[in-house]
Length: 474
Image (cartoon, rainbow, N blue to C red):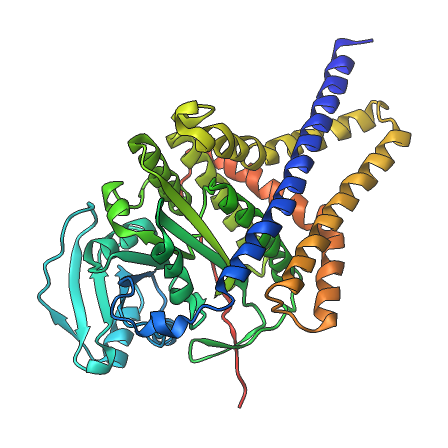
C-alpha cells in the first residue's frame, strides 16, 4: 500500500472521529437548551413588565445605534427607537461620517439643533464634529452625534463615551425592536445577586417578507425567498438552541452586534470596542469575560430566548458570501487576540471549554470540511471510495442534520411560535432538506475565502446591501 493511500485513509478516519465529536456536542447543546428555555419561560410567566417600564428605580439605559449612509430609512428607524416605552432611556444615534443626507434628514424630522456638549474621552475615538438635541420636548430622549468616519466599532465607542446611563444597548440602526425588548433585556441585570451580569443578548429573527409600518413590525411572515428562509432556520438553531445552552453553562462567547446589552462600567474598563477587527461584537464579549476572569470576580453573561429584535437577512449569494466571509475573519481575529486562554485552566470554563469549542468547531470546521471534500474527490479519482460504506454514512449525516433542524423548529413552535401557519412550518422543514447540498457548501466556501483573505491581509467590512422591508398596504 502506497504512503499516500495510508495518508488518505488516516485523514478519512480523522474526519469521521471529528464528526462524531461534533455531533455529540450538538446533541448536548440541544438537550441542554431545553432546561434553560423552560427555566426562562417559567420565571417570566408572571412578570409585570409595566412596573419596570414606569419605575424611577429601574436601571438607566442608553441605546446606541451607529448609522452610515442610512438616509432612506433613518427617520423611521429612529422613530421606532423613540417609541419604546421605558422611563430611564436615552437614544443615541451616531452618524459615522455618512456621505448621504442622513444627518440632514434627522435635523429636519426631529427639529435638531447643535449644542455645546463636553464629550468624555474615556475611550479613544475619531473626532466628534457635533452633538444635536431636539427643540421639541417630545424628542428629549434623542441625542444625535455627528463624527468623522471610523467604522462601526469607533461609532459605538463614541456612543459609549457620551452615554450617561449605567447600561448600554448596542444595536444596528436598521433593526426593529419589539416594544418590550429593553424591559426584558434589563431584567437579568436587575436580578443579579451573587454574580454580576456584565452582558446580555437577545434572539435575533429574520424580518424579510414581514410587514413593517413606521419602523414597527406589524405582521410576521416567513421569508418568501430561499436564502432568507434558510437563514431563518439557521437563526432558530443558533439562538434558541446554541446560545441558550452556552448561556446555561455561562460559557457564551458571542452576543450579536445587532442587539446586545452591556454593563457600561465594565465596557469602559475594558477599553470599549476593538477597532482593529471586523468581529468587534464577539471580541468585546471575550475581552470582558477575560477581564472578569483575571480579576477573579464572579460574573455572568446571559441570553434571552424571546424574539426581541428583527433584522433583514441577505437575500443574494453575493451579499451572504460577504457576510460569512466577515464572520469567519472576525472569529479568527478574536481567537488570535485572546489565544492566551486556549486550554488555560486559569480561565476555567472559558479557557477549557468555550475557547476550544470555538477554535475546533467554529473556526476550523470550514477548513476541515473543505479538506474533507477535496480528499473525497481525490479518493473518487483514485478509486479508493468504499461506496457500500459511503452511502450509509452520508444518510446518517444528512438525517442528523435534518433531525436537528426538526428539533429546532419543534422548540420554536413550543415556545414563541412566530410562524403560526402550518404551511410555514412545512416550508421550513422542506427548506432544511436542501441545506447540506446547497446552502451549507456555499457557507463553507465563503468561510474559506474569508480565511484566505486574512492571509492576503484584506480587512474590508464588505458592502451589506439591503433591499428594505415590506411596507403595509393601506
